[in-house]
Image (cartoon, rainbow, N blue to C red; front, side, top):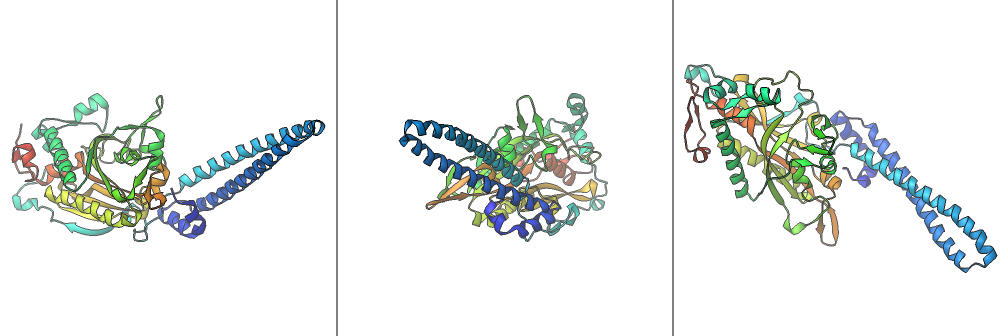
Length: 422
């Protein structure tokens, strides 16, 4: 949520940010108008309540005949105060709900444009030339069958499209990836967390996932729970309504959880395989820090993601995501995209977003800084999204016979150097 005082003083900046995101800049004016009505309603209510307090004292000192008249006037004044309070409450609700519709303010360095207008920051590694090895690479689904690692047919039979089983070495590879990710995160000072994956509406709304991302969220209406699409949600809400000690910041958490996404609007995209699915496991990094340290922390999260990909021995590129493709909470976002040989393309496998104080205001997470309290900054970053990392490993490290070499970093967790055919 944007600081309303900052919005009043910098409306043009917010309008420009809305425009850069491809969102309605007129919403800024609606928020300003609603805020003015809110403040007017508060002034009216407080004036009537002050009048009521003074009036009550005069009733106490009045004589019997006059007191009867004053009591009747008091009833009218009490009714006016009650109506003013109701108007104030409604005006506050209206202003708050409109303010929640505004996305975070864009970082001036973020590229402006739509999904295709990202900026490539760097390429790491060189895509493998399979012609030098004299064979055409198989895709991850064919490899998954040969290795007994992936079963989408039975996944569809049991749960429908975009579901799958990881079996045999596929399941072992997930465990290895998770163990390597958590051990790496702990070495960097992260606290490992296994969070709940069912959350209440305030947690989902507070992190910004009930706005533009709502169509991709699974909602259990009978119980009013949401299935999280990322452990960012329960990790962000972990300190909801708390005041943190600024001397103990940054607080870093690494959450392992199952994630659920509707994949609305993705009809026809990545229907083959496990790149775009409804359920997957992920290790997510999350940081609470001082706002002035957020930019540097964002670079650290990106570097930890790059370190992980380097350890998987996979070619990748880093992109600066364009404004129109940012989530509503992010002021800036970097993606790491792994090279997928059979698609002849780079595909997103990790991302990291700087949300500054936007989520913390919505979740009421503050820090004690001297005599003052103020919102903290929050940042998130995917360390490993299991299915896509499995795709990248299988396709990049395959051999002509369908066996797959295991990256050196994962061999201690698997006790083998290669996945053999079943």
